[in-house]
Length: 415
Ligand code: SAJ
Image (cartoon, rainbow, N blue to C red; front, top):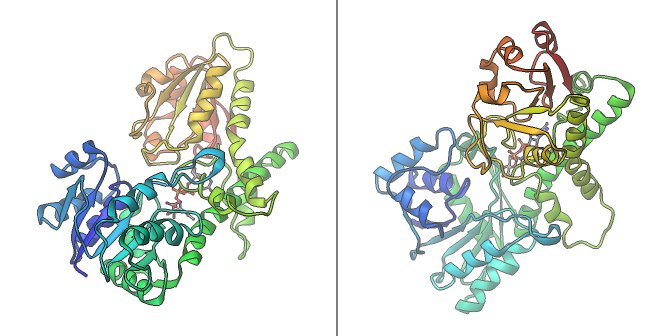
């Protein structure tokens, strides 16, 4: 197998295409967005991610990676398109379906089809496999090979983790799983384990759900600590000194295109009601309201309060605002009638108005910090204090040092 066609040139498809192109394969990257195709075809990235430019330019300049609007006949087809949350908290599989429709006329005997997109159990077999079978009269597992190979990379560390993380690949049969393993082995240094299609689909969902539940636990502990007037950050720090405890951090809510979404995919087709998984989604989804109410309490009594918001991406040091709790919080603050001025020097996909550091702080009554980008450390607390009208910081990430903040004569609030 020498040629690979990857559908979806986003956060996962593009880096994966680059790695395969730099490790022995002829790769064509397909995207339905003309802007992305023309930008990549002229050697320009549309995504910010450390190390990506280097691997992309190598693949592009050596002619191993081409980008197109149209599918090209290949040995391997990889679907790496988004699976957003649709109506009623169910997976919107429309991009997966249209990608399968796009390749169905090209798949022939002995080809390998891989789904990478995070999906509810059964999607690879019942959606991708079926669409191809219906059209080609080929049988999955007999005539063509079918596998699920979920990504596990952390935005901000995608290239490092693509290479070094372990992978779990599911196959419709052993041959399919082994063929997929061979493709990924070309660049993955971690271990690659093989299992069934549905197990690998479920493993991916279980990993992200585990994290969501752990964060919900931390958020619930934070609320309870508030009632006792105990510092939650100390509780997490000391509890994690136990060899078998690893509590995550509370925060303003859970964002991103994975952890806030994938738990729903586990429960969307099950009979069991009232799951822990759904409860935890509820806890994490209620964070923006708790945070905006606390912010309102801090500025209570101030005439026409102005709130400077620092960092609106879904987490630190990434530019992505998808599902960011900061957006929901800003919305709540605006509904309460406050002036909100947003400062984020690294965000890439925000449609609202962004302000410079100085403009956001000028005359502000509260600095509300969400995504704790490293770059915020460069702004001195004295400078912040100097610009603000009323000097309050509400730190939702335990980013600032309380003593330092108070030394600068700023009142410090945190979760
Ligand atoms: N968060 C907290 N407290 C924490 C950790 C995270 O509130 O202690 C919040 C973050 O601020 C953010 C959200 O959770 O809003 C998600 O951030 P994250 O760093 O936990 O995860 P993602 O979405 O960037 O990446 C996750 C990873 N999954 C796991 O760690 C199990 C990554 O490995 C997956 O590949 C990725 O989802 C994915 O694409 O599925």
